[in-house]
Length: 182
Image (cartoon, rainbow, N blue to C red):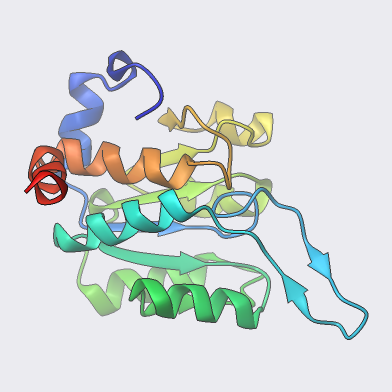
C-alpha cells in the first residue's frame, strides 16, 4: 500500500473485518474519470492492472465484489468478466435500488458492505454502507462524508488500496502475499 499503514486505525480495521461485499463505482474510481469516445460512438476506458490484481486477490479471500455505475459500457462488461465479477449493475442513474438488490440477493446487512465512490451520485449508498470510502481525488462533499479516503486517486491504484484495507481487516493480506512468494 502506497500510504503509511498508520492511516489504518484499529477501529477502521475492525469495521473492515466485518465486510463481505465491496461495491465500486467505475468512472472516477476504477478509472480516472476520463471518457474516450471514438467517432463511431465506441467508448474506451483505462483500468489500472494493479487494481485488477487487488480485486482478484480480494475475491480469493472470499469477499464478493459488486459494481454499480451510472453509465452503460461494453468495455466495463468485458473488464468485469475478465476479473470474474458477476454483480454488475450498469446504467444506474439512481444507484440505491441496485445496492438494495445486492444486499437482498446476497443476504447481507449494510454493516457488511463497503462502498467506494467519488462523486455526488455515490452519496446515497455511501451514507448507508458499513464503510464509506472516497478516492483521494473525490469531490470534497464526498470526502467529507467518507469513513476513509484512499491514499491514491481513482484509476491510479485507489481500488487496490481498498482491497488491501479489507484484506488487512480480515487478516488475510499476508496470506495473499505468501501466494506470490512461494
